Image 1 (spheres, rainbow, N blue to C red):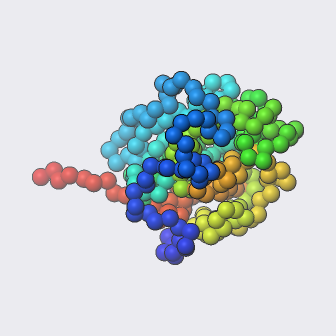
Image 2: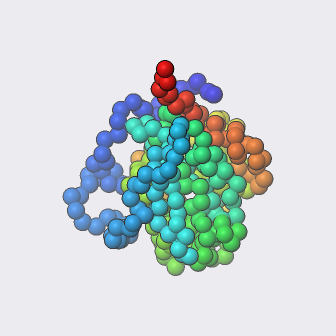
Image 3: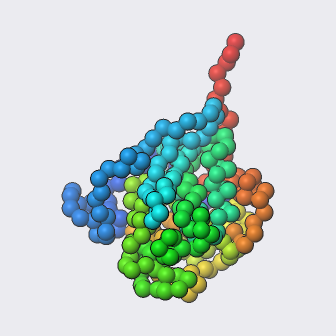
Length: 281
Ligand SMILES: [Zn+2]
């Protein structure tokens, strides 16, 4: 566990988060009216509210949420963990259906004991159709990480970007969720490259992630097509920072289950806490 200072870009972790008063671009929020991008208003969905979930004593789960549904109508689930009022973090795995190993990190965080020091959302299976079919893309054959409305261009083949920006239900579901949560930090887990992208919005944070996860620093170029990526969209539109983490082709099971979850928490000096126990005598 590093005790190094997170550096000048680190946000204060004590102050409670004020309700956002600015829009995605940092401009004063208009009282009503259209968002700058395609945020179609939908009728409230039954699964889109915060729900209580069954949990055992000492569990870290605060609630669950269905962000939306995939092309083939599979739910995209998020779990809310940790402590409200701490730095807000979103962890996303299996954006590409054939890169599912790091999802175990998120499941281990979800299924273990109480987490202290971070307000954490985990989305272990962002692309459930791709996961079911063992494909990179969703059921429309679209690479979700080229479908976001920031520097979107029409790409074909392995990086098929869809008929237009935010054409996919999975993209829109995540955009709604991130607008609502407005996390301070996002880690987006991928394979099969190996390292942490430090050529990003806040390099000091990315270097800290690499150090804590014991991964090399890299400069990922999105296969030469950095268009329409989720991290690019988020970093451009919000104050928070999104970073890509690549865990190699075959990360060890024990690393994913036990070691990496602790390492991820340590990025924010968070840890698994001992649940408070009442005296029985
Ligand atoms: Zn990927």
